[in-house]
Image (cartoon, rainbow, N blue to C red; front, side, top):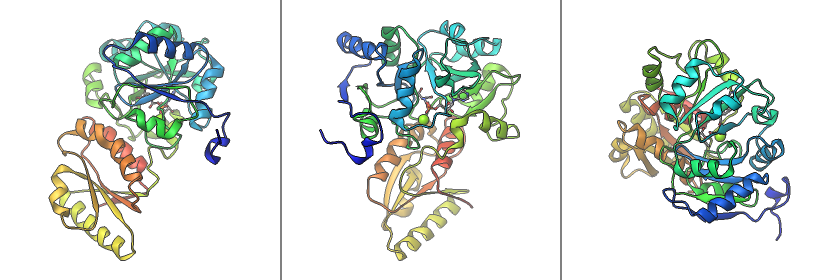
Length: 362
Ligand code: TXA
Ligand code: MG
């Protein structure tokens, strides 16, 4: 089989298989196969409740190194270790602070990743040489079944090429990683659609390194006190502590401009930009809320609705899918509206800001 130029930079071309699996009752034969690939040091993509992950045996340094090659991910960006049981925390962490135990009991399985001091059993490649390890238990029956069948914790970043948006369907994984990994388990679209919240519990105060599926409000309620807002005073430290956040992430290939401010101001500014882009001979797509749609009817722009302003769960679920769809729609520019930060809106905002080439504050 001829190799494309794009794939020649990696190891050899693998014969990637994609198999449909019912998450509620996974075919035991397929599970056995996936587990034996993991145990043999191979790579299996699987759905979680947030996004698809690219899994390898977390205790096998060579296997985890293959994740970095397949994704073309820089070695300084550590990966999350996925476990099926809270008890695994004791094996992977050198020390489990009381706050970690409390939050794991409350939110696992679920979209909360805890960063703790690492135990020696965790290979350096997992933590990018750092002293901490990120651990979570995914709330997805197929992910949990795979971890149990493999009988080992599974290291898994999102199953996209480095710097692309995270995959929320098996097809997205195929589009990015076919020929570079062994197997894709297709368990349908992921229910949450944005990645887990990464919370550093290795220091004195819990710090959110990445907003995600568990909201800051829910964490504050569980802890009985407010958390430092991401990007607030200790945000600079937080960003440095989470190396992956230094990169421009989640970005579509098409330039995306993000408009923030009142709805009226956003509408006016987007109208002006549509006309300006037309003047330059550019094709434009819009990423809008359902409430915006009628405003732009009849204008020369392809409109994609990602959800209602007051339904952040719906917006989160559709966000990456919409970015990917617009990316292949052949437009020159994406104009996107901002969403309010309530609930999952915080994670949506964060991802939109990372995706944006320009942010227009109105
Ligand atoms: O929902 C999710 O978290 C998905 C699914 C597959 O579990 N995974 C995911 O992994 O989004 P990834 O690698 O795309 O993002 C993990 C983030 C990165 O920003 C990384 O830098 C950070 O977690 N991270 C991992 N280990 C860390 C550590 N020891 N200390 C600080 N940040 C860490
Ligand atoms: Mg990622």
